[in-house]
Amino acid sequence: MRKPIIAGNWKMFKTRDEALQFIYQVNQNVPSTEFVDSVVCCQAPLLRDLVKRKGENLAIGAQNMHYETNGAFTGEVSAQLLENIGVEYAVIGHSERREYFNETDESVNKKIHQAYRFNLQPILCVGESLDIREANETNAFVKAQVEKALKDLTDEQVSTLVIAYEPIWAIGTGKTATKEQANDTIKEIRNVVKELYSSKVSEELRIQYGGSVKPANIKELLSMSDIDGALVGGASLDAVSFLELVEAGLKK
Ligand code: 13P
Image 1 (cartoon, rainbow, N blue to C red):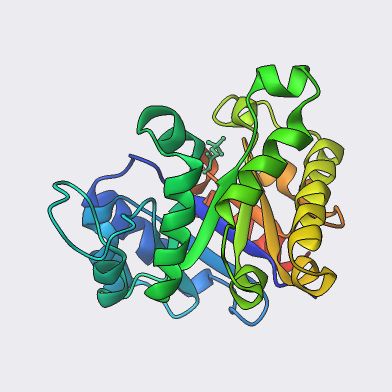
Image 2 (image 1 turned 180 degrees about the vertical axis):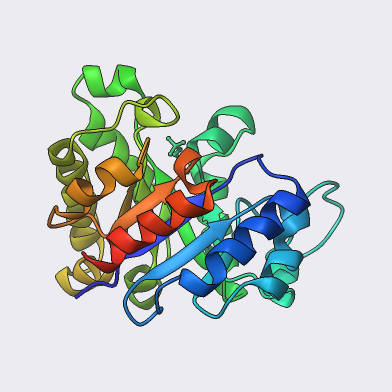
């Protein structure tokens, strides 16, 4: 049995006051990590504040990190520092970073290795554009992304990895993939992992769906066999909505 994981990706939203208010609102009500993992991924300058004030059942994640430990990389954030301040997760290879900040499959792979070096739990994002889906090339595209991202990772690392399948056409558009579309592609990802590793690893790995997930549609998505959780943008910004999302995870 895979434990559901619900993660909010706040992207470049929220001031410090708004973030702290959110944390105080959700702290008492986040369900036990025994049943569901709940994560909030915020902008880097907020990480330490949230780590200090979060309740025991919430984990805090970064939205990006560099693959080198330190050096002359102006403006970057190291995995070593993230671990040092108590951050537990790192989103890696989000489609917005691939599109606007030159993130490549190679840098994504290096970042996953680096995250494991510093005990960060990577959430690897993959997903196709509308053109690719309409050309019926989704499976081949996502397969290649997964293969490149996982290069030289061990069985043990991949069995604890979280992958978020986020079709680009469903992000921030209000257009969710149908539960069948999401489950089919996620099954395909599990299959790729099975071919590269083993059925044991592919059964242990957790795979989320992301793209216009909200309290109104999360239950049907989580009712599917291979969807283990959600990576949520817009609907994770509001405390009440975030709690409804993790509540749905609890019931999976
Ligand atoms: P939305 O939930 O706002 O569509 O964003 C999805 C996403 O990109 C999460 O990483």
